[in-house]
Image 1: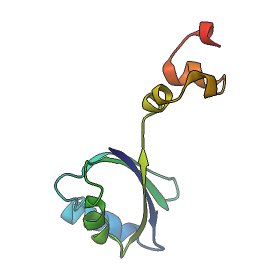
Image 2 (image 1 turned 90 degrees about the horizontal axis):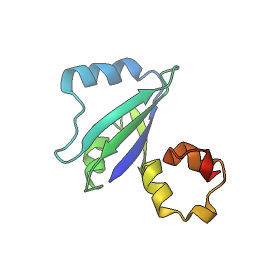
Image 3 (image 1 turned 135 degrees about the vertical axis):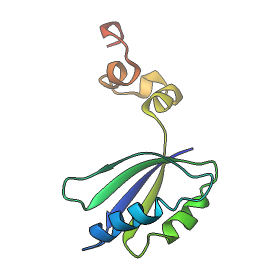
Length: 107
């Protein structure tokens, strides 16, 4: 399953976060997979896309970073999966062409 992890960096923690990551790596347990991440331009938040079949693994990983970061872990699905799970009659008109890559004939 996919998860979006929202990390809020504690005040003044950014240098320590990057130092620990350089020295020790991501400190993730086996079975928790990092996919990609984005950091806001003010270095206050990080958005990480991660994957695991065992959500309890987040507890071990978060424990390694709670002195520097506050976490929110949100189960997510791709837009394509969400679109297939939602009957077309319930979707807003603008939703179809962008999510499913369909042409004007579906507007």
